[in-house]
Image (cartoon, rainbow, N blue to C red; front, side):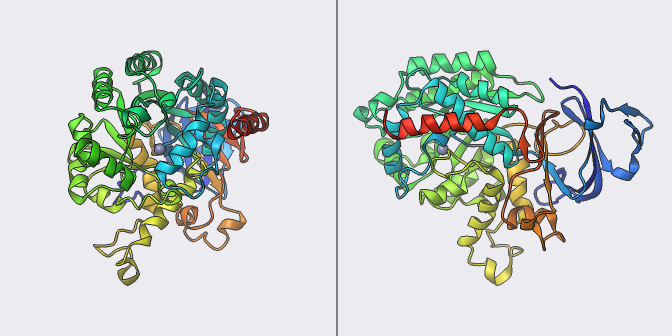
Length: 482
Ligand SMILES: [Zn+2]
């Protein structure tokens, strides 16, 4: 682990996200951030520091010696934010983009399951690197992934290895499917695993990888895939196993009307009632999507502290619907953003997802045009709220109090974007809004856990081009069905 000190100074605009969602902390101009080891040590105005050569004197009088000039970063023209947090993804789907282009969820899955049966350990590893690279280039510093299909020699270890190599903070969720077509489920029988094996491997993953400590780089959660691909028994047993170890629980819920119809016909319950019956309500649970919750469902989730990964691009791509984000936030539901698997997005761009969240909530907002976003009945979210969901919201959803803001004691996960570019010309009077209202590009700089991972817009932890070529070869083989 890199234990050096870094000073980021002359920052044009610093967004600390240290206020609340409804009361933002003021933006800091001409700011500085001192990083020591893997955490943020000091935040303030650049003029409060005295810099002589490589020595930085803090207002307290303490002097920090930077190891080299490469550790003194002058970020004029840059806006700096906490790294973005992705709360739902299926990285392997990066191999199978742009398929089933005109299908809703169930037909889309039926088209893709047979293709995914060709996945291998190498495919999981390489696609994870590619998906993580695109996420990181778009500002993501912490990502959760939901790997729920394990044909051939695939294992969750493959994507954890990728995360370690590329330097991404990673929550691997050990997904699962156990209800094949012959038992009334959606996936083909060949795509499901035996439940005793799933539980055994889930326990192994927790014991081998889960790190509950502050600034942890790897955590594990358990994630039976969806009501139509696992049994109630596996839901219950997974919940009990997760709670025994104190790890979180994740699943798809209330994504589409098809799923609701499945729950009603098979269990006689709507999705959230089913979740409750199988012990899946609680502040250690987050659901992907949450599009089709009733008002009463949302209040029940808020009361028990459930989280939701809002995935606007995927919900539009598969015509799933529009999640009631404003209602969930008012009811106290934790809400973060997810790009979802990049076969249903079809990108891994998290800053773009914040823009999509902002835009999508306005589509059905009848009061917005009349009263603006201040109207009590408006469902619109602001640019600040969209970025709050992408940072603090995501941190809350993943159960973390050490990421999502730039403040002393928090993990050193920071991104910087150069505002002096064509996309932002004309928007510099409001740099924060520019990030979501204007066309999003990649980040110029990113640090994760005190380690620089992107510099001058380039990923510096792996050699990406050969990985992309390898990825495209695997993708071609899968799509051809070989
Ligand atoms: Zn998903």
